[in-house]
Image (cartoon, rainbow, N blue to C red):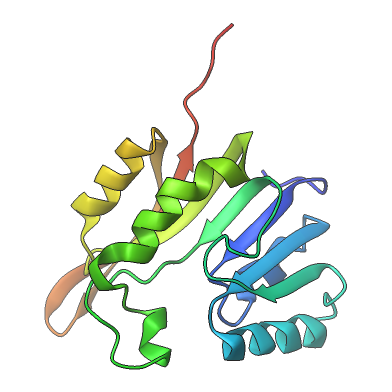
Length: 170
């Protein structure tokens, strides 16, 4: 459960919806996106939802403009591995999973010891590669939710994972 004192990072915030929802429990939410238009949109949406003072929205390429550690990191990354054709497609395409790979290489520096990551991913992406990155990062995986559907006649699923540091027994 999310506590009022938990620090939350909404990575790749887009419209800001996840960060806005997080303010219903947490008083400390930072929302970042590489796209300056998304940053402005997230700021406006936070204001419209009367939580502008509780969500700090800033432009950042992953952790570039982020400091401190977080109890919860939310990330809905692009899960298509091809080169984006334009700036807007960057929200859904991550060439060779460079962004996803960097995220898992850097996340330990921003996660508290008891922190967790909630990450959404689709089966139209490379799930095996995602699991490889998680294993390399030494994180434990739990599938929280799976929504099955169909796209263009193919079975697809959208999955929410929780990743945590391994438990330490004393």
